[in-house]
Image 1 (spheres, rainbow, N blue to C red):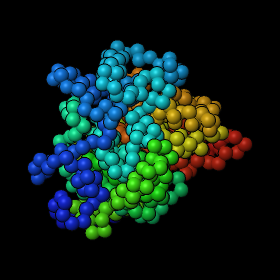
Image 2 (cartoon, helix red, strand yellow; image 1 turned 120 degrees about the vertical axis):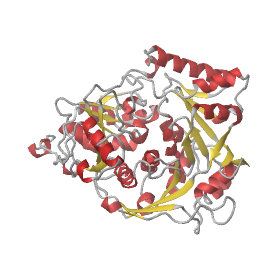
Image 3 (cartoon, helix red, strand yellow; image 1 turned 180 degrees about the vertical axis):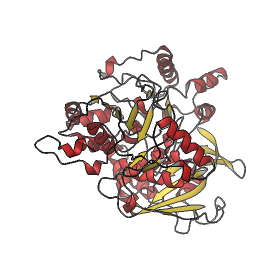
Image 4 (cartoon, one colour; image 1 turned 180 degrees about the horizontal axis):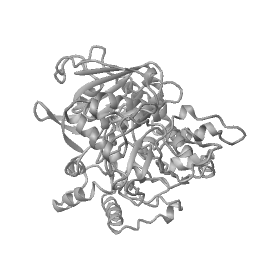
Amino acid sequence: MTASLPQAAPPVRGAGPKTLYRKLVDGHTVAELDAQNVLLFCDLHLMNEYTSPQAFTGLHEQARGVAMPGQNVAVVSHIIPTHPVAPKLRVIADPPSALQATNLKANCDRHGIRLFDTTDAMQGIEHVVAPEHGMIRPGMVVICGDSHTTTYGALGALGFGIGTTEVEHVLATQTLVYRVAKDMRIRVDGRLPPGTTAKDLVLAIIGRIGAQGARGYVVEFCGEAIDALSVEARFTVCNMAVEAGARGALIAPDATAIDYVLARCPDLAGEWREPALAHWRTLRSDADAVFEVEHRFDAAEVAPQVTWGTSPDQVAPIDAAVPDPAVMGDGPARSAAERALRYARLEAGAALAGTPIQHVFIGSCTNGRIEDLRAAADVLRGRHVAPGVRAMVVPGSGAVRAMAEAEGLDRVFLDAGLEWRQPGCSMCLAMNDDVLADGVRCASTTNRNFEGRQGRGAITHLMSPAMAAAAAVTGRLTDVRRLAPLIDGATTSQETSR
């Protein structure tokens, strides 16, 4: 992989060729406040149960209403248990969490806001629910009190996370005081080799540019490898761009993205269809648009990735060794690596492959969609979870769960010894009852491996769904490309040793 150096200063708004990002910002600017900030109109505001309560309280204290209820949607996702019971029987037992959900429903009822509540069969993670219901369309500005709102860039929509105070402002005005970001372009040419996925690609990119490598930028992804990705794979890439510090992520909408949207937006018919398509065709960076920073990568060089530390940029190919901080030289990177290895209980120079794991989690807004579950099922079919390993699959939404069951994927998971759960954020973060114990090592398809992210003292290794499935059946970090073939439904001794 290669990366280029920064280029010229940013262009002035409204002058000359524009990047896709600048087009979206300019098209939604209600007023320019100063040289750095604009008042931005927001097409869609998504809410969850944990960032909205204070915002509604502030609104009510000032006797304000919600300006545009129809352009706000709420989802209960982070705190909800995912036990395998019928949706109508789902109960949040933890009193503070139950209060959050109750308050969200009361606020949505009061202001006429659509809510995917605890017992809604279509409930799920906001970043999975919104696109699958046709709420996300090219050219939109979408905001949410959650950092992984960058996901929607996969459809050519500008999505980003906001804080509670900003949530209140959006509820009251449907606008946001927004500091304009800088432009970065990441071009990925070539093709991903067999056994590697969009998750491996984005982890490799983050590992190269660093957890702060895109700080202050909105990143536009392009290139042959990006064009070849499915929309669901593009969601994964844009979702994790925030782990490099990006304030947003974009992929210009092409036929793949537009077909995805049209299939989910029956209202875009008749007289509305052609104007929408004409507008979407303009949503790409102009040929002479200037990006402050450009990076270039070769997808053919990407191998299956696994994180070894406590930041998504502490990542390496599965066939690599645990890095040695001693060769990094004095400085923050070395100190961070030393601390990460202490927390992860790994030895410098040890092989990543073969590291024993005790838990596997397949799900999250990064990898809880139907294509992710299919990829995991392809590895698990005919195999069984290794002794001593607990493995769980949590679909990203009720719709994903229904599709998986219609395809028989639930039977593949259950036959292989995995738990088939109800949708929710689950073990992506320790905000519900899916929490790991101190010292438990987890192969996870989530987006963050921070200290304590999945439970106090728990150790998280980020990877793709296929890699997580490989870890489940071998009981250790395993290169999915090296799994031995199935012979009459049984694995060879070679597979269980890797």
